[in-house]
Image (cartoon, rainbow, N blue to C red):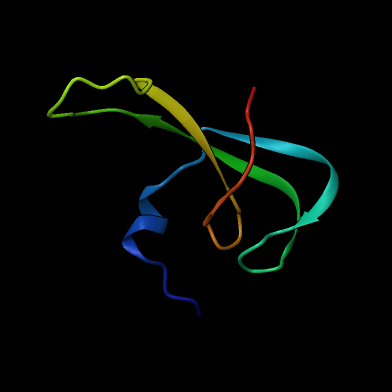
Length: 72
C-alpha cells in the first residue's frame, strides 16, 4: 500500500476541471482527463509586493505535482 505524505493528506482540490481531451502528466506520465486546481493565498510578506494576493495552481490528481496550466 502506498504511504501518503503529510502534504498529500492535508491538501484538497479547490476545484476539479475536466479536460476536453486527455493529456499526459509531464511528471508521472499518467494520462489525465481531469486536473485539480488549488488556490494560493498570500499570508505574509516582509516587503511591499506587486504580486497578486491570490492565485491558482493546477496539479496532477495522481502524483499531485504542479503542472503548467492557465485558469482564466
